[in-house]
Length: 233
Image (cartoon, rainbow, N blue to C red; front, top):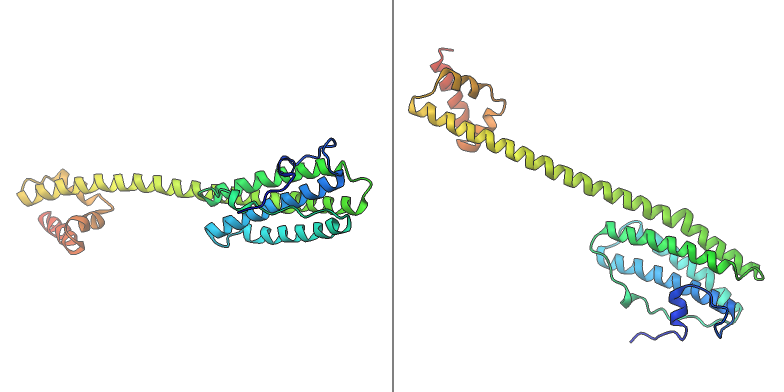
């Protein structure tokens, strides 16, 4: 069973509350660590679901470094480490594209969180420096990577849909040609074929392919040969 944090509501809200019965610096550091736990467990669960896919496999390592950068500050200022109880709470989307969209939202929220936290640590240059560096990493690296991921998978989805649409059109065109071929072949075998029918049949650039569907490749070529002989060619 996951342990709950005594300040769970504050940690989830990600905003310092000056009226809360806990030192502001403690709130800042616990909120920062808890959010890094959230990011780490989100990306870990995505990897558990989809495998070691980029950019999650890279960014999860950065989340570990973020936690490691914050840990000495908690130790220095005597701040209790929050419990990491995120994994079971996280629901993973059904596609990588949606996961990347979640990543974009999470990093934007992370950047905004640090904007708020930084307002309360001007008296602590060492804390301020770490928070600035973590925020910069989210903005310059993580957010960029997730945005590129969204663009990449969106384009891939469009390509698949476009290919499927083209395939449907091509299948429909082929079916029409097969039906035309079947009609002309029927006329030929019954002796009711006309010069116009023969011209139409020979004008098809896909005659070998279409004939192959109905007769097999050799049957189609034999039919063409018979038509040419009938025309005296």
